[in-house]
Image (cartoon, rainbow, N blue to C red; front, side, top):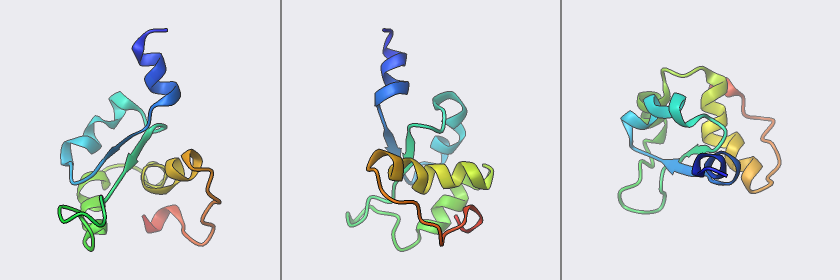
Length: 90
């Protein structure tokens, strides 16, 4: 397989505090990318993570933001869905 096939099938990438990262998603796709805040490291976006999500991903539809900040990680680690959190709250 070409390297791109491996990327789309098996690789997950994370990004945080990366304004250009949100604009490059159309080239990467939404299925294997995850936003991160890198907590508890000192260069983390926490406790202002929502501000960074708004800045870097605010141009995306709510469904896309939900996929990037919670749904992809839940699928990767086989975690239960968070039914109390809506896509609009991301």
